[in-house]
Amino acid sequence: MTGQVFGPPSVFHDIRDRTQPAHSRLSMNSVPDVAAVKLPACDQFRLGLAIFCHIVTCCVSLILVIEYYRPLLPLAPNSLDLVITAAIGVIPFALCSIVFTMRRFSFGHALGFYFYTLILGYLWLVEFSTFPYHHRTAAISAFASAIAFLVPALFVGSPIPQRLALTARQLDVILAAIVALSVIVLTIGVQFQFQLARPGDMYKFRNEIDLPRWLQYAIGIVSGALLPFAYACFVQFRRYLLAALCLVLLVLFYPVTLTKVSLLAPGWLLFLTLLSIYFESRMAVILSLLLPILSGVLVAVLYRYGLVPDTVFVYFGTVNFRMIAMPSSALDFYNDFFSTHQLTHFCQITPLKLVMSCPYKDQLSVFMADSYHLGYFNASLFATEGIASVGMAFAPVSAFVCGLIIAFGNCTSAGLPARFILLSGGLLLQIFMNVPLTVALVTHGALVLFLLWYIAPRELLGGSKP
Image 1 (cartoon, one colour):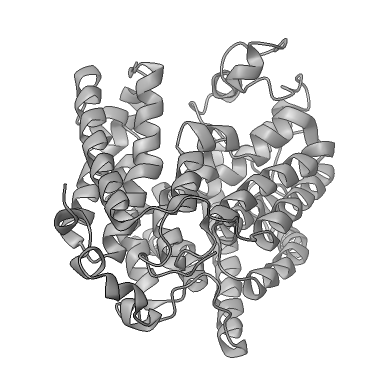
Image 2 (cartoon, rainbow, N blue to C red):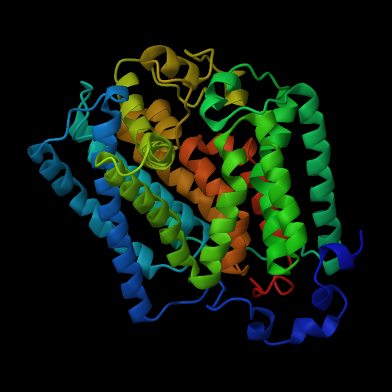
């Protein structure tokens, strides 16, 4: 493929463009787009106000989740005493959010805010939990784990010397190869599985899917890392037709995988793109959670008074319950399960299972489904690499190590435009919320994305030399 197809003519065909001022190459943004930009005090205040609104909205959303979905979760009904206790319990953690207004944007900053929301949800829900494990100890462990993760994820991001940087032509070839590989993987996947199931039926048919292990890895890496990276490049180069092609390829994986990520990926990346155009990247991250959750709260309130039908209320169940509350509630289930069962000591990681004795032959999701009958659901690193692997006491240590791994991603992306980091890592933000760190790194291609960030040409993409 030639640069005319996959790259911007102004970049690939005129070497003088590399010497133009950064503002002329980034004119499509109404706000500065480099990750190293530090906001003035007034903008930091607006960030803090947005975070405060997000925290309040999350708490209101959880009250409504308990009201409508308590039969599915081991939670006590809402009462004034429990709501006040939960509100008091989250105040110390809410105060810690000020760190997000002080640190510069990075992938760790974005992921850290998503994980902050996850832990905030657990600290609220644990006050309503009816499981018999020691709730206060678990809450302290979750609080400490969040801080332990955020310290390296937010404060470590020094650039790694770039020994290899792609040229314009090499980047053009890689983008063409990504698109071609995506088409090949999709074509192979269709030979094994193709089911046009409605979103409400995806869970019923998903258990029947039996793809080869290598194909599962290929689909995960293509959809989680490669296509979002290509999409971010095309958006940065204003090649919108090719960016749209990436979105089409992403959604075409839905009949093969029957996952929410494949189904919602195009809309999610478009949503992040719009936010990144009109808002600074840190504000865009906050709004990417605040706006969907707030919309769900409004839907639930209208539904309560009979102003919207059941079909509209599905939005609240999908976003506020499944996408936001369930990752938080998963910590409740894992704390209960491993308070009476053996720890995994990381044996759930396939290579380690081959060299060490493991009390669990199947995946943890299978044991959780058999124990709680809520289907096969995975959980974030706080549950799997933390609670399941080392227990409550040492979960903060595990979270700190996981934070260092994400900090490595910060280092590989240093110098890239903030919007580019947000868009290329946008799907991974959702993936990390729902799967273990090791699964996100390998199966969903986070390590591959780190490598692509490292070799990406900063000046061509509108960034700065690391």
